[in-house]
Amino acid sequence: MLAWCLAGALLAASGPAAALTERLTDLAPARQVRVDLQWAPIQWQRGDRDPSYHLMSAEVPRIEYRLDVARYVGRQVRVLYVIPMDAGLTSPLGLKVRWKSQGALRAGEARAGDRVTVFEGRVAAGSLADVFDVQLEVDSRYFTGRLRFDPYFEIETQ
Image (cartoon, rainbow, N blue to C red; front, top):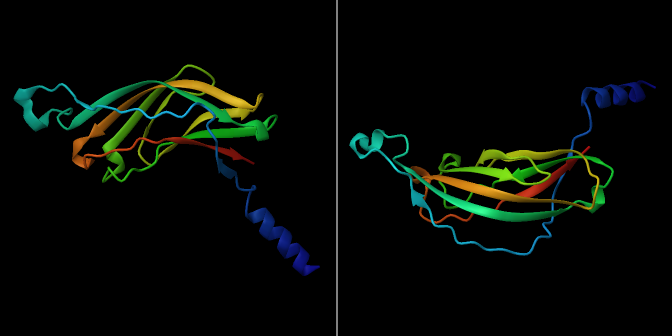
């Protein structure tokens, strides 16, 4: 009886069950886009004191996503947009990503290495579709000259 009580106390102390996380499959057609970074306009008289002095940016319009969530229809979930840390960066400060959404997912902002919630709720259909307009901002102080922007989505369930 004592062992049973201890086991119950340990379960109660551990809190709610941990969320299960899985990478989602994107069913949108494969795409590969070459992005040309442009230096930010700066006030040359301020030199490197200008906050934009080390910044480069690029616009990547109309990235289509069709996330396969068929296994989760009817379930409460949280979908995260993951911006992996790339070998072309020496710090997460080297990349800031902003995106605007045109569908079911939330707009947002993240740095390299971040996971940002873009959907939270009950899954109603077999896919979550959206189109993102993405802006990349690269800080040259943390950039090695080669960057691969390859974000993905994860899903969490309880």
